[in-house]
Image (tube, rainbow, N blue to C red):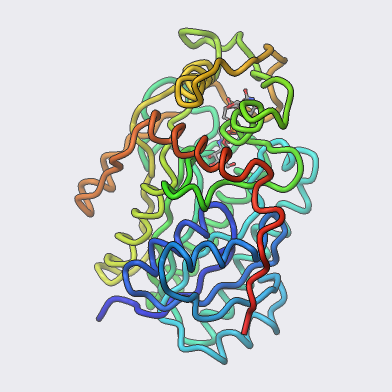
Length: 349
Ligand code: UD1
């Protein structure tokens, strides 16, 4: 089977989706994007196209739970494979709005699977998350580590993985590559694309960048009483450009063997919150002020990838370190102090 050439990207305007658009356009793919802009903006496509020097084939504003609208997209385009990014992703919001998280993340995935199956499209790269492992204790987590989702966001992604595995079992024509991201951060090196969350950011890197640029007063470090060397929580941060590079490589391997295959995407290196604060301060040239705050509900003390399976399978590994992640995130924040707000709107046709 030849590699896919026309891809449908759900959530293609989002943080990882927009960087993936650039990467995949650069590698010759035709792209169809669907997004409901719940945490993104269509302004991003003008930037994607400027970097890539090519157009996104078509962009549709729709919620993938709208089965009729989604089906119409599959009717209109001959899609070879799907990359499914669209989801809610904030841990703390998921503890406040579990029903919405399950509805969007699971309902979106089942709607997509139905549309794919009805249209004879059976190749899928799925955005999963390391949060499915939950509080699995100290040490690197491999793909066989039992899942212990600690919040509704993580549980929703874990349930999606189960649904995808069942779909593959029942319908052997499906191939699903589920990529469990650890903590994707950073920005495109051009400074044109980055993470631009609506409202108050939930994640560490955009919070740091907004404090450093003066949009927010001080960073709150959630907990310094974890059983870690400096007391703050440890995560495995991966540059968004490495994460999207892994998706491009995954597409080359969709035809390797049917069924569902799951891979961690991380560096295999844990960094504490205070280490990230220090790296960001070095990148921005000034100390980022912070206060110690109580632990955040749903957080786990430590999550570090055993990233060896993807390297064994595809000979792929990330190449960018924490300093690159901070430098690129800071460049995006400096060039876009208010994110994408004010960017000229793309003329969709
Ligand atoms: C979580 C998921 C991760 C997923 C990501 C998507 C877990 C364990 N991880 O990442 O798989 O890809 O959501 O958004 O569920 N922090 C602060 N101050 C802040 C913000 C964050 O101290 O203002 C701390 C957090 O408490 C945490 C670390 O920074 O210890 C990273 O937080 P964040 O960037 O929000 O990502 P996770 O919650 O780890």
